[in-house]
Amino acid sequence: MSVEVELSNGVAFSELRSHVRITPPVAVAWSKTRADEAKDSSFSVPAKLRAGTAYRVTVTAGMRDEHGQTLSRDVDVPLQVDDLDPSVILGLTGTVLEATTIHGRAVPVTSVNTASYALASGALDPHEVAELVAQQGGGFEKPEHRFARLSAWPGMRVEHVSSGAGRNVSTAKRVPIEPLLATTGGRGAFLLATESDVRVANVTDLAITAKMSRFGSLVWVTRLSDGQPVPGATVSIGDKVGTVFETHTDGDGLAAIPADKYEP
Image (tube, rainbow, N blue to C red):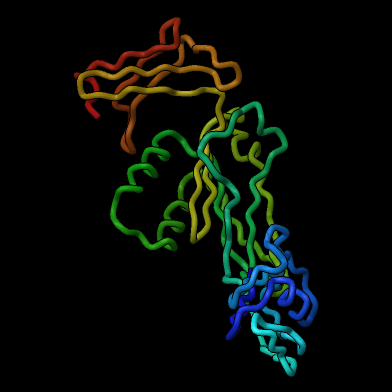
């Protein structure tokens, strides 16, 4: 966060730096590349201010401007930093987690200025993933309605988390990944959801490269761990209703999908 200081006349950077005070004291990350004698009438003071805190910014008497004039008295300005906006953040980015890396890993769910929130978590089957993907391009649905619907899916665990933290203090609940997929051998898709956000990720050692066309499609399956092709892998195309087409990869990890079986 920065404090902006506007002056009627230009002053040297070194002058401003030596005459600006912030109370209560805070760390200021002054620029190390700006020339001391560089003059300006507008400065950004990169101060580490705390949310929900009242400060006083003072420019002390004696500061000299570019015309040789000096400030005759201290100038004080009150500064009130707002509280942080209430939020719950799911600490999960991307959609693929390599299976060999998830042992002992957990997803942090960080909340601030939120007394409590509901958290849904659980494994997803392929059709549930397809339904979520299809809904991304659908009509608007209120977040709380979406959360209620997803929470009712089979296997979803819903818990109400109380932060117990003070104002502007963040707390994190850690959700271990492996228990979410205990019934699927530690592989597959899982969901984490709050009333404001939904995240889906897939734990796998399989990579899919696909060229999809109305003239016929081609899928190549390889391993994330070593990049080698995977023969005999099941490749299925499905939607939220069911499987549209299913086949298996050959010795090179390739699977062809005829045009009359699936048209994207």
